Each structure stands twice: as structure tokens, then as C-alpha cells.
Amino acid sequence: MAKDPVRVLVTGAAGQIGYALVPMIARGVMLGPDQPVILHMLDIPPAAESLNGVKMELVDAAFPLLKGVVATTDVVEACTGVNIAVMVGGFPRKEGMERKDVMSKNVSIYKSQASALEKHAAANCKVLVVANPANTNALILKEFAPSIPEKNISCLTRLDHNRALGQISERLNVQVSDVKNVIIWGNHSSTQYPDVNHATVNTTAGEKAVRELVADDAWLNGEFIKTVQQRGAAIIKARKLSSALSAASAACDHIRDWVLGTPEGTWVSMGVYSDGSYNVPAGLIYSFPVTCQNGEWKIVQGLSIDEFSRKKLDLTADELSEEKALAYSCLS
Ligand SMILES: NC(=O)c1ccc[n+]([C@@H]2O[C@H](COP(=O)([O-])OP(=O)(O)OC[C@H]3O[C@@H](n4cnc5c(N)ncnc54)[C@H](O)[C@@H]3O)[C@@H](O)[C@H]2O)c1
Ligand SMILES: O=C(O)C[C@H](O)C(=O)O
Image (tube, rainbow, N blue to C red; front, top):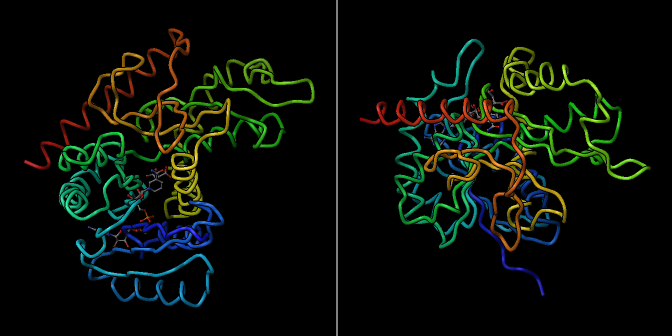
């Protein structure tokens, strides 16, 4: 029997991530090849005409799984009945700007959209915040939508996770699909900590530790970390625009694994509400290694954290605490 359609909201849908993301969702990349979807696309009035153009293209693409499109500048209409909300709307960072510069513009958007989601989304709606500062926008959304369970609110660090997999795969000249269990800890910013201490590669001789195969701690503790931390800025420098296709693809990976589950023995990175695991202060949205089953994520417990890692986990937590304070000062 055909499944009922799932309603997926994409905010900022007329923007560049939106343009890459909506066809992926309509093709089943996010929720699977047998899951019909109804797309809800929200943008602001100056982008209304462009948004309507995206809607026209979705119709023209004749996606078999796409059962309807709502394109609107009305936040209530956009949020009504949605099962999944991918929050991309906001102002992106331009060359030379730090994430903090975009903070005040974006947190106020997330405060007001929190209430719309709380009132109008379907019960148990899963929320993914992509727009920067992603962790702090997600935290503001959580705080101003108190009736949405905190386990349903997340932010995107899967792009960073995928970037780390990509760097290891290039360095070792192995298939990216054979590399797993890297971790992104903390903020989706240049203080994030890409950690390979538990990562492995599937080889013809079985699973091997990434650290053993790379056999170059100086590279792993230096250039590798920096490359992943700075990748967003490098893309902006090269394209004069921030990453879009990789961000859209990572958003699909994030929701797919959350809804359909992570493969046995594999974890992924998600920005989620900290419960104090790994001595990360509770009350921040922090990226952890998680496994997902039956639509719920769980932080992977018991991983060893050496002194080098501990400092990096704390540094990015400190930045998130500062961002939280700054966000509140922007809102007051
Ligand atoms: N977490 C990540 O990994 C990641 C990766 C890449 C980009 N980003 C962030 O994603 C966001 C979107 O990036 P982009 O390149 O698509 O930007 P963009 O400027 O191309 O698109 C953003 C869209 O949001 C719309 N918008 C602005 N205010 C809105 C509001 N109140 N409600 C609904 N829509 C609104 C704009 O009109 C625009 O169409 C940025 O904040 C960017 O920094 C995050
Ligand atoms: O770095 C940015 O501001 C863009 C985006 O968050 C990215 O990681 O590509």
C-alpha cells in the first residue's frame, strides 16, 4: 500500500541551498524512494517571485514522489501540518564575515519562527536548523518553542562530518564509503573539533584505525583539523558564495539517518541538546556522535577522550556558551 505523504518544510527555499535541496527531497534522497512528499517552501516577500519560479520548476520536473507544493511567504501557512522542518532561511555569511556577524540578523528570525512551528507543525515534527549560526539558532528555536520536545530539535554538523570523511578518503586514497565514525564535536564553526580517534577504514584486511593507516599524527592533529574547520570559508573564497550542494546533501543525510536509522556499527554527527554527556555543559546545542533508531537519536557513550581532545571539546563549548549569551543580548 502506498505510504501517506510526509510534509517537509524548507525555509529560505528561494535561496541557493533551497534550490539544491528541494529537488533532492522530491526525488526521495531525504526520506527514501518509496516515500511520497509534500513540499512546503517559505521565503520572504522580496523573494516571492523567485520562490514561485522554483515551484514552477518543481512542477516541470514531474517528480513521481512529489504530491504537492506549497510556496508561500506566510509563515503560518508554511508551518501548518509539517512533519519535518528544514530551517535554511536567513542571511548567509559573506567573504570576510565571522558567524558572529550574522548572529543578530538570524536569531530574531528563529525566535519568531519557533512560535509558528510550535503552534502549527504536526505533533512530533522533527526540526533541523541549517542557517548560521546553526547551533545557536537551534537553541533559540528550542527555547522559544517550549512545547516542542528538545529531542526533536537539531542543527546541521553533518556537512562537517562528511567533509572529515572526504579528507580522510582523499589522504588514504580509499572510497569515502569505506571510512566511518569520524566525529564532529561542538559548534558548526571554526572551533569545531573534527576527531578521528575512533574512526576506521574498511580494508581488504578488515577494519583498521584511521590513525594507524594515516600514520602521521602531525597531519591529523594539525592540517586535517584546520582544513575541516576552515572548509566553509574556503568554499566561500572559491565560489564567492557559501556551500550549497554539499549543505543540501548533508541535510538529506541528517534527516534520512534520523528517520530511517544509522547502519549497525556506524555513528554520525548531529547538533543536539546537550544532556551533559562528555562533560559538555547541559543546555547547549552541541554536535555529538549519535546513533539513530526508530526516529530517535542517542549520544554514543563511553568513548575515550584524551587530553588533546578534552581541550578542544571545551574550547568549542566555551564558544557556544558565549554565542548563547550574545544571542540573548541581541534579542533583548
Ligand atoms: N550548517 C551548515 O552546514 C551550513 C552550510 C552552508 C550554509 N549554511 C547557512 O545556511 C543559510 C542559507 O544559506 P544559502 O546559501 O542558501 O543563503 P541564501 O541567501 O542563498 O538563501 C537564504 C534564503 O533565506 C531567505 N530568508 C531570509 N530571511 C528569511 C525568513 N525570515 N524566513 C524565510 N526565509 C528567509 C532569503 O530570502 C533567501 O532566499 C545561511 O545562514 C548559511 O550560512 C549552513
Ligand atoms: O562557513 C560558512 O559560513 C558557510 C557554511 O556554514 C559552511 O560550513 O559551508
